Length: 455
Image (cartoon, rainbow, N blue to C red):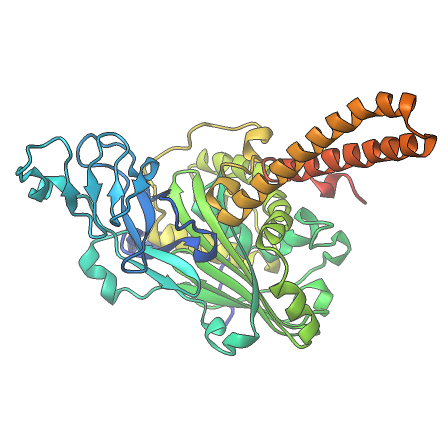
C-alpha cells in the first residue's frame, strides 16, 4: 500500500498530466440545518454567484444564478414572494424555480418579454444528500451521470450516528485546506491544547495507496495519541472530500470529515462534519441535545488555530518556481498524506491555476472575523446572536431602572431593600458583561491562539 509519495513527480509524469475538470463536479454549499427557508441566501461557487432559496410549493431547495437577467442585480438581496417566486429587489422581475422569468412589472399589460430566453437565468442542479445541499457547477446534462461524493461509512448504522456539523468560509485556498486537514501530524502542536497535545508528538509512518485521478487512500496503523485511540484510515475523494476514520476507539467509531468547496482563489468554504458512533448511550444523548450554535462556537477556535499561518503559507508557496516536493522539505513518514495530495494537485490541477492571491496578505483581525464567514450564513448562530443581544438589552434596561431606584430606596425604604437592590445591580451588571462576551464569540476569534498562551 505504501507509495513513494515523498519524491517529486518525474518529468515523464509531468508530461502526461490528466487535468481534473473542477467545474464538472458536485459540491456541498451548506448543511441543510443551517439554511434559512424564509429568505434567499447567497453563495459563490468557483467564482459563480449563486442564490439558494426554498420553494415552498415543491418543498425543495432551489439554486439559481445570483444575477438578474435585467441589470445583473443580486437576487439574494430580494425576497421570496407569496406565489413562490424569487423577486429581484431592483425592478421586481420574478423568477420561478426553473429560472424562467415569471413577470416583468414594467412591461405592457400583455407584453411577452418575460418569455424570451434572454429573460431567464441559469438553474443549477441541486440535491440534498446526507444532510447537505449539493450543487452541480458544470453542464446540467452531466449532473445525472456524475456521482455525488458521499461519506460511505455514514450509510451504515444510520440511527447510531451523532454528528457535529459546522460550515465556515476560510481566507485561504481549497488546496491549502485539504493539505492541512490531511496532515495528521500538525494536530499535536497547532491544536494544543484544544484537541491535541505536544507531548504526543513522535515518529510514525503513514501508508498511502497509489495516487489516482479519483483520489487515494491511506492508513496510520498506530493511530493518534500514541496509539490510544486505535488505527486510523484516511480517504481522499477528488476533488474536495476527505475523511479520517477510527473504527475501534475506546469510545466507539470516531470520524473527521471535511468537504472543501472552492469559492475563489484564496477563499473556500469548509464543511466540517464530526460523526461519532458511541458505544454508550449517554454521550449520544448529550450530543443530540446540545444546541447547534453552541457546537459551532466550540469548533470556531479549532478552525482558527491555523488560519493565519495557512493564509501566509500559500502565498509563500506561490512564489516558488519548483514543484511542491522540491520547494518544501518533507523528510518523514508523517508527511506522506500531504505529499500524496500535492502529487494529486500537480498531476490533475487546481481550480484557479491562472489567478494570483489578492490581497497579498490580510491582518489577523480580518482573518479571525466570524460574523461574515459563519454567523451571517448560519441560521442557528444568527438567531442565537439576536437572542443574546435582546437579553443584553434587557439587562441594560433593568440596570438603568435599578440604578434609578437605588437612591430612592436609600431614603425611603428599609435597609434590607436597599441591600437587595444593590445586589440586583451587581448581578445584572455581571449578566450584561457575560452576555456581551457571548455576543463577541459570534463575531471575532481569539488572538493570540491558546497554544501560545498555555503550557
